[in-house]
Image 1 (tube, helix red, strand yellow):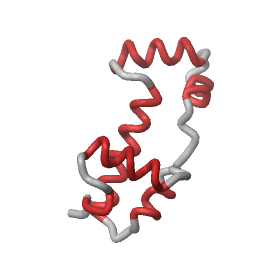
Image 2 (cartoon, rainbow, N blue to C red):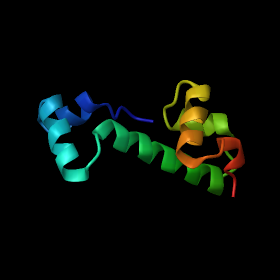
Image 3 (tube, helix red, strand yellow):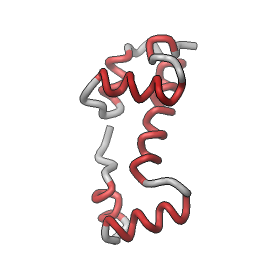
Length: 87
């Protein structure tokens, strides 16, 4: 749920945001923003499988301000809504 914006990451790496993004894509093959989004959704899936947290709680813990947006992103990534991701 922390600040993982590209400008924040770039500042931590002592690079400009554009230089940081170019180097990140060269190293990982995806943009830093997409990497963070995937990591957040993977963590969401894990929390839904392994805890009793509600979907709302998971979204809040991971920094999503809009539950509807979180649900759409989760479904786009995993093919099922987060309410059906319990395991």
